[in-house]
Amino acid sequence: MTLTQMTIRDDAAWITLDDGKVNAMSPNMLREIASHLDTAEGSVAVTVIRGRDGIFSAGFDMSTLASGRNAAIEMVREGARLVERLLAHPHPVVTACTGHAYPMGAFVMLAADSRFGVEGPYRIGMNETAIGLTVPRFALELGRERLTRHGFARIAAATLHSPEEAREMGYLDHVVGTGDLDARVREEVARLAALDAPSFTATKARMNQPVLEAIATAIDEELAEAA
View 1 (cartoon, rainbow, N blue to C red):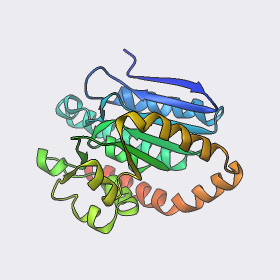
View 2: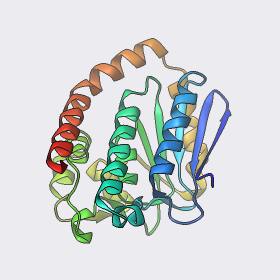
View 3: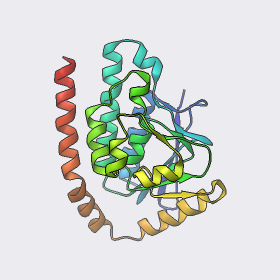
């Protein structure tokens, strides 16, 4: 079963997450997204990742987490690799949050270069401690880099935010009406595609090098602890 789709048009790769349910980030979905990024890297100027109506992603797949320690560790590892892949992607990445976004969905957005969300009764954030999970070290390093100080401080309390609050906390850059999302994202794609590509790539690499190094260390520590 295909959990994602990618369409290339207007010099952009449009990746849609749609598992027919809540876009749980299973190992298969994580690998599909990574594969699309590989394809996009060599063929387009900008990549857009969006969810289905009402949901960006409900986060890591709970059935995989419940299926055993090894499977859970490998899925979290795949998630960390995707975050690294997004931060190191040489071209701009835009996320369009079409509704709720819980981990790992929030992690994907935080790793993007430009982040949109839609208005509505949606919740965005990291709620691991409310469901008996410890926030992965790599996600904390990502949050430390991308969230405001107050947004980072709310992680342990499992606070989920409205779209407007999520913008204030650093999860989103823009909050727009549902009917305006596509047009605003297309405008942003055009703006980013017009930038000098080599300059963007070099600047992004310099900006993200510290957090990539911190995430790599965090992954090693997590794996050592798990062993």
